[in-house]
Image (cartoon, rainbow, N blue to C red; front, side, top):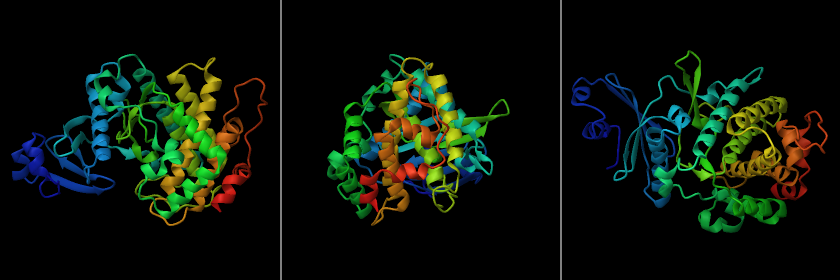
Length: 394
């Protein structure tokens, strides 16, 4: 069954999520939201609004993505040891594997965080910290033994595809466009990029539930019961058992994207990209430091493992920047300047992790042997210093 705005209400009535009275009274509004999937928002006056998702093309990858999002929703409802997940994920009402449909409750009053994150005085560090702390609690709770047993069969623990792209590009992207081919060539011609990505793939960790697709579009804020703002995380199609720092690295890369694209955050009303530096790097550094402290305070106390965790964060941030380069170049014949810079930054995080964390994200090195200098005000010089990548990308 191919859902449309015309037959959707009949489908919802058949499965008990709408009623004949809604049809008779015409007390319903359906809005189709065009994104990667077929998405609909259904507003009913007699009950909470619904968000309906159906995959447009049924292939193993889309079936698995829908199954994993359903698994996250099931965990939130059934697993008592995951209270943070239950509080932040939209409530799952139906998973229909036959028609490849998910139905969630709409979060009342929700707004994409991109709408409120950036202001003239900087990045809203309170919101960034709240998101990071939320991720930390989800990771800590889901790392407990047995917490993911209910859905273990559909969470296979695969490493993100980008860490294998240098070795398996033709298998991962059999129909690569011109820009993607350029990026793959750059990775294969750079020992720093190719070796670092491959090493992350070989050493991939599977310790907690990770969202897997952190971006500002997938974070929403809504009015909280205490009068404040509640963080919610949506679109769990790429969730998996994996390295929790992958989500944190996604946040760091998303913060760097604000600087890289001059304030472009994503969402439906994104500003046109500006040159790097239109948003001062100091804004990014302040938010990144806030995020790391908030996350580490919830996920684990800073201790003997903090130095290694921070170094791994740098390496994973490099991988997320490579992923960003592919996303910025989708369906293009040539890579964009922003994608080229993202690749150069990735090489910095791989080859000089402590310096990149310090200069780009403002994180002070924890090892006592390193000097604690003030953050650099010349991140562009750091990016341009990676000659092998810069020469290949320009």
